[in-house]
Image 1 (cartoon, rainbow, N blue to C red):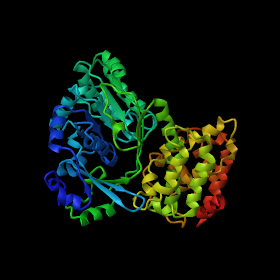
Image 2: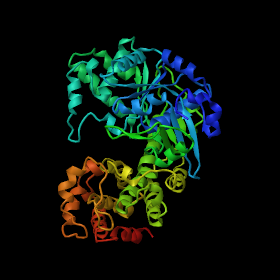
Image 3: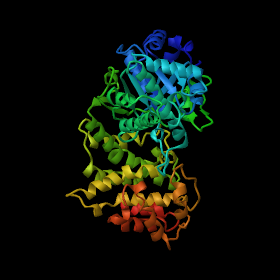
Length: 538
C-alpha cells in the first residue's frame, strides 16, 4: 500500500484496514480549488494537518463547501517536498484516544502545497494569482508564536525585517513581509476584502498578526514603495479575528508509525529536515480539540463552525479572549508547564507517565483547584471545571499521546508571565483573595529556577530544552551549586526581578520569601525535589 491518490482508489483495501476515506470527488475538488480558491493556509506543520485540514475535510464530506485548502510553507520548505507532494498532498490523520484505540483518516482536503520563497518563482506566481482572485475568503495561519515576531529580545528589528523595510514588497524575504506583499497584490486588484485568521496558540493572535502586517505597510509607505491608502485598506477591508486553538499534536510517533507499517503502508517513515523539523506524511494527535473564532469575516465566510467537529465555535471577541485566558492562565497551560518543569528534573520522558505519580497529580490539582480556579475567567461557552477535569482525567493521562516534558519545557521563560503572572496579578487586584495565600505558584517558579541548573533529582546533569533566556540567565545560574544554598538568595532575587519573564517584579510581592525558601528545599541534595513536592502536596 502506498499513500497516494492512485492507491486510495482501491477503497475496499483501505477500508478493510480500518481507514476512513474521503467521501467527496477529489479530482473535482482539485479542479474547483485551482479555478476558485477559497482558503489558503500558511504553516504546514502537524497542527494544521491534524485540525484545520480535518475541519475542511469534514465540510467537504458534508457537501457544505466545494473547494479545499492551498497549503503554504514559508519557513521549512523540505516539509512540502518530503511529507506532502511526495504523497500527492495526502495525510494520514491518526487520532489517539484515551481508551487506547485509534481513528485513522486519509485527509485529502489539501489540494496543493506551495513554497513561499523567491527560489521557487512558479509557486510564488501561483500565490500571487490566488491572492488576486476575488473568490479567496480566508488566509489562516499556524506559524507558531515566533512567526509574528519582527523584533529580537532587545527590541530591535530583526535584520531580515529591517532589510525588507528598505526594499519594495516584491522582493520581501521575511515571512510576514511576504504575506504583506501578497495582501498588497490583492489591494492592487480592486482592494478586494479578505480575512486573515491566526490559529496560533498565543494571546490575542489576530492583533499580533495585524500589528506585524501594519508595521510593514507603514514602513513601506514611509519609504515611498506603496500608496498611503494601502494602510486604510488593511484597516477597513481586511479582518484579523482572534481565535483560541487547543489540540495537542506531538511530533510523529514511532508507535503510530509501527501501526501504519503493520497495516502494510510503505515508505512513510518520518524525516528530520535541515531545519530540525520532525515531519512525516502522517500526524498524530489527541481526540479533544477546540477552535473558538471571533465572528469577524470579510468577503464572506467558510462555515468552519458547521463542521461535525463540536469544538469549533464562532463567537464574539470578548468570549474568545475569556476562553483563551481560561485555558492559558488556568485550566491547561499552567498544568502543562508544571509537569514539564518537574518532569525534566525527575527524569520522565512522557507526560502520561507523570500522571501515574500521585505527587505530581496532586501538585497540578492543588495548583488549579485551590489557586487558579478561584480567579478563573469564565467564558460561559465552555465550563472551566469540566474543561479542567477533562485535562487531568482524560487528556494528560492518555498513554497513547507521545508528548514529553522536554518538548513542553521549550521556551518556558516566554510562558511564565501569562501562565502564572496573570493569576498573581488577579490576586493582587482581588478584594477577596490574598496574594500571600498562594503556595503552589511560588513552588513551581522555584522549581523552574531549580530546573535551569540542569541537574536531575539524582544530581546528574541533563540537557535543558531550548529557551532564549538560558544564555541571558547563565551568569546567574552558574553561581548556584547542586545541594548548596550559600548564595542562592542573592541569585534568585536577581532572577525574580525580571519583569520580562514573570510579568512583574516578584521581589515586591509576598511571594518573594516563599520562592527563596522553596528553592532551598528543592536544592538541598539528592531526592530533595520529590521530597519537597511530597511535603507540600500531600
